[in-house]
Amino acid sequence: MLLVIDVGNSHTVLGVYDGDSLLADWRVRTQKQRTADEIFVALNQLFGTRGLSFGSIEDTVIASVVPKLSRALEEFCIKYLGHKPLWIEAGLDLGMPILYDNPAEVGADRIVNAVAAYDKYHKALIIIDFGTATTFDCISGKGEYLGGAISPGIAISSNALFDNAAKLPKVEITRPPERAIGRSTVKSMQSGIILGYAGLVDGLVGRIKREMLDNPHVIATGGLADLMADVSESIESVDPDLTLAGLYIIYQRLKKLGEV
Image 1 (spheres, rainbow, N blue to C red):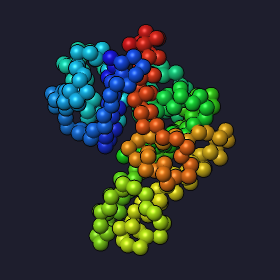
Image 2: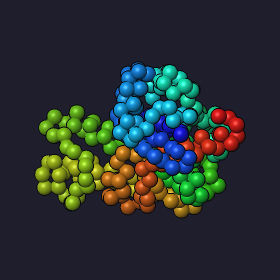
Image 3: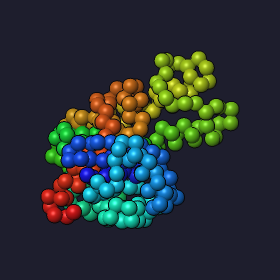
């Protein structure tokens, strides 16, 4: 079996593949100070809920944007799984040309999403990942990573509002408001945060489409993808397991090349 891990700034997504089947997946909060032993305890509990054991894991693939956790994850894999993990980075042969000025600057999660989405759709794409930051990744019809855009995530934006406006309460970002014109402070804030962010998404997607020219398909992923898909006019599909699928695809590709 294959353990795949995507470490984001706010959440870590994990999955276990048996062949090409995703047996189990989890989303947990990223805790940057965790030790290898603490990671063992947490994952052991998760595995137990699905009747899985570490002994069945043959390999591990990790994409991470949190360098502080890298040493602990490496130590966890060696100590408890008996192997070193494969780290996803731009220098690997990922089967996708990266047209960034400096390919090493592209986050591992963005590359993984791009590989998975193009493998699934085989056409021009815009991938929107709603995480701590919201990333817009652009893939050409030829399967080239063109670049994209990065904006503050919804939570970061709303927390800045709460922290800097003393009289405004903290509101939940759980479901879209029924009206753009809010008739209370809370509803006005929900409108501004959620519908306002949808306007950011639709406006940026519109500009990107005019530059790409080849009518890209727009995919959303990440923790708030379903919520934003309900209010955005440009999102065409939601794929919550995109990153996990990308890790699996890259692992299989590198395995065939003899690099793992």
